[in-house]
Length: 250
Image 1: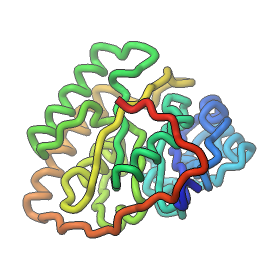
Image 2 (image 1 turned 135 degrees about the vertical axis):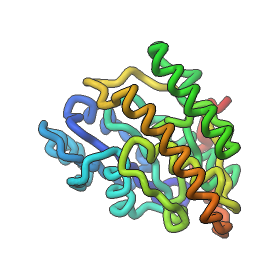
Image 3 (image 1 turned 90 degrees about the vertical axis):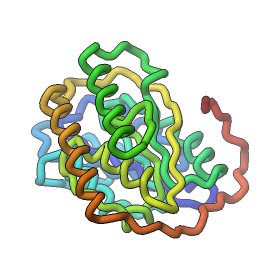
Image 4 (image 1 turned 180 degrees about the vertical axis):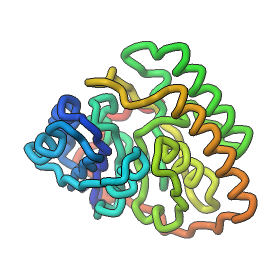
């Protein structure tokens, strides 16, 4: 629990037995539950997750988005934190993000990896992210440095007001579109550091890149036909913390 609010961490996992120990080890004490969604893994992903005390949810529909939506349905915390199961995202940074979220009355935080990476991304990956960032700006007027980031912190109550249709990698951009364009939702992008992944990447740069771009176009024109109603959520108020949280937010 963090300042009176329960915290759920949701991790989609497909053959991540090597990355999970790094991801789950030393999870911050403020986290009330960790949910690992086993998305048809062929290795010991579920066994490793349970060994670290995580709840394991099995999702048979293959896909990043399908796994996340299964995890969201299982989550019970007031606030949900998402991360990949490959050791890339900083679990120790969770209290800092929560502190900023509550202090500034945010409903949704998207994390930016671009300026704090431990290694340089390939030229193809950098170009692909730039194209998708520009498409988000042109189609939805959302200016993000990292539209494809997989670490988000948000109020679980927001899910009732979101139309999340993608079962694939496009869920990452879709949930940001839902948060940043929905009237009444206070959303912000914050920087984090990012480590090299453990194990092999499941991302197909060409296939997933073109799919995500096409999804943005489809999502935009569906939105023209179905305007989004405003969201009215009471502001989250954090109780006084026992000790201040050291921040390194730029």
